[in-house]
Length: 227
Image (cartoon, rainbow, N blue to C red; front, side, top):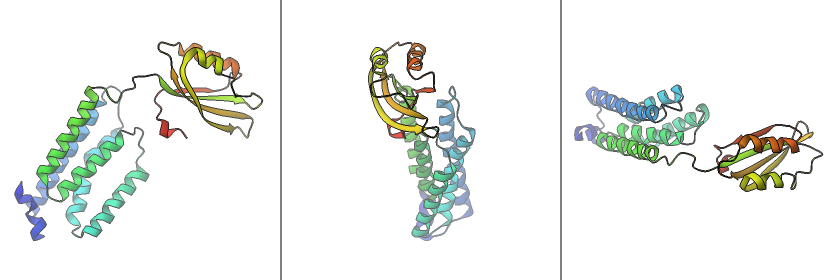
């Protein structure tokens, strides 16, 4: 392993060293991608994102290997981050951890620190596996985001308090905006439902008040993502 960092001091990169780094980097990317596929085998995963996770360390390591100037490397990595940001749709915020993991692996491999890259990969995989094993990433409560469309002539202040008191432990009006050219209002609430409530009955009671307009109940919300 130590031989792979010699070129950092001598600025000589042999074909053999180059191939070894590419092969090991591909293996490490495959391990990380394989863990992603295994952990999400039931819920499913984006195949294109899987391929991205496998190839990203390889691409980044190639950039680092071929660009000797540290400033040029920084600009090259900035370009990679820009492409990831604007060309990749992150549907799950946990996916960001995988993306940055690939960057760390590719950077370590590109600089010739193969042993460190292997340790980084195994350590990150162990953390992700532990989180999945302990189910720390699963929803364990009844928090949700509730969107209610109401007609413009309905005074929404306190209009749903009675229904909320029956079904909810907590609720907070987060946002109000007009829709359909001002003919309706969209109310966004952060709520915490009581255990074992009948969600259909809850929504039916809300529909009586909002004249059967649209209602959206999303239990996979993240508060900072509420627009």
